[in-house]
Length: 325
Image (cartoon, rainbow, N blue to C red; front, side, top):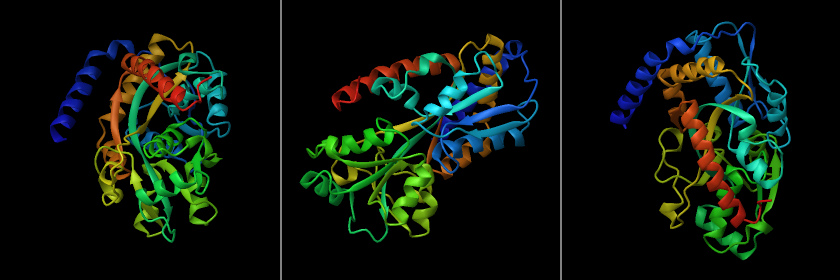
């Protein structure tokens, strides 16, 4: 990991040294960093970490404000960004619903309607229950779902067809459970879904790992499984993977920075350089690791190619699940 980290930072350093001439554009007023989910959500946490690092290190000119636009499975935030075409003062932290919403027919907007800026981080999916739940392990959960797919109430945010939904569907499919019969409640944020589990209103929350560590350490939540290839560090170090429990399910989400359509090359270069600088900051890397996220920087052009590849892969998965339109 240390070797990969050194290589990554060296590459970022070379990138920054090679692109100063392209960054003539500067923001002329307040910047809105949009989180298309409620305060306390996984997206909101990444957006606020990005804001903090940018401000602490003075990486942009002027102020940067996090603006929450929750609703519609991130669609409200996407529509808000879309209304500011060509304006580099608006950027958004997106999950891969920017791809899946279009595939499932939930929203006509897709990644092709926006400007890719950078891939920021990768985040795995955790399956958590109240610590007092009779469901003790991932295998217990799957046994329940195989016997009666509607016997476990589930919470996820913030849209069907997203990473959380795909992860639980893949886990169910591994034991022959009918994921179309799962009893799922969709919330505006992962924070809300976790609260529902803590309050005993919902049996299971499927959520990205960044928001569950504190509740796990406090003894309020139990992690049944993480859809990662190996155990994570930090507060989820003791959480078992699905593979450890004999179920080959590995799936994760990612966080990318996008802008509105029609951004100029100078605006793209400006934000690309900012994202590269953020990704090289120890504060960014350490905070991501502390919250069980993985740094995953890619520049604008590579992010565009990544989104195209993801679109093809996710369409295939959603078609298999019967969700593609």
